[in-house]
Length: 331
Ligand code: UDP
Image 1 (tube, rainbow, N blue to C red):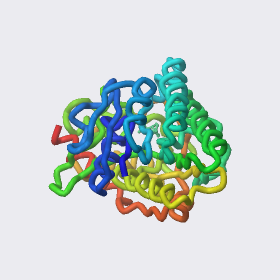
Image 2 (cartoon, rainbow, N blue to C red; image 1 turned 120 degrees about the vertical axis):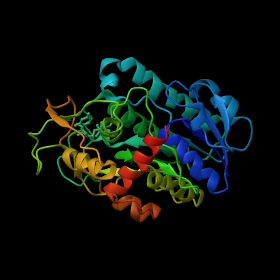
Image 3 (tube, rainbow, N blue to C red; image 1 turned 180 degrees about the vertical axis):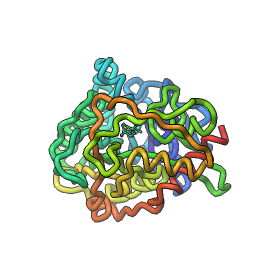
Image 4 (cartoon, helix red, strand yellow; image 1 turned 90 degrees about the horizontal axis):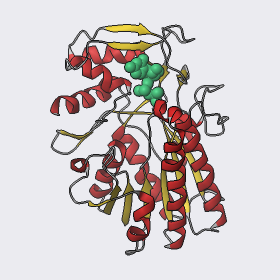
């Protein structure tokens, strides 16, 4: 197939592009390189530099594109609340332009990077896809709005567009190719994610890690999250495209699937894993809770398993951290 990966110079997008190429597809990456890295675009992919909304017609009109994996997004939770326009325009308006272009050029498949942030503070755990969606930040609200838009476009196209929204939980680890060298991982200019921040302490790039709250209603008082290896996540995109190619999207043409390991780890457990993997003492200090953080976010991935045939293979936290550590040290 010929597939377009938007945001293919970013963390998740580049790993998805790599997996798609390895499976024998032709891949075009679209990325404006504002947060992505040119050298993260996998060898063998063609890079088109530009905003998705600006280049969609050029890219989708050029030939027979079989599908789009739409990862390009603004994705900093804190920033989203301070600068809502950047997120409503950058995520929602851009994706509507993409949906219009998909329709104009009769592109039949879309896989969208959605997020657990669409659920907000959950009432039950693990979270299933029919849980209430009440996002607690602008980022999650924009992703939820896009999920709704995709559902409407898919339903109205009467079989013309099949779509899968994948709601990622906490993506972590790095892609290790056949060489065993972790080539693609997380490198954000502004790093806010727990595992890379903890590893920065082990690398001597920061003094300590702040633990955002130790008074949560969890076994050790720190927040619990569901960490999923980026290679497992990427595989789900391939399975979603396969499902759409078989014409097995549900009635209405839009499937929403959570993606997580189904196991929760606390902030302290993550720090301990990082200590084991790096051999560094990693000083930690308790800090106030971070605004908008839910206490526990753990996925039910039953639907991904049943509908996509997806099963994560990197469920061990130390293994996920070890890949992230190998990548961090290689930079
Ligand atoms: N966290 C923390 N200290 C940090 C960064 C994150 O204690 O410096 C916590 C955060 O409160 C959350 C968990 O680690 O409970 C994972 O946060 P991250 O930003 O990696 O992902 P999120 O769950 O917000 O998507």
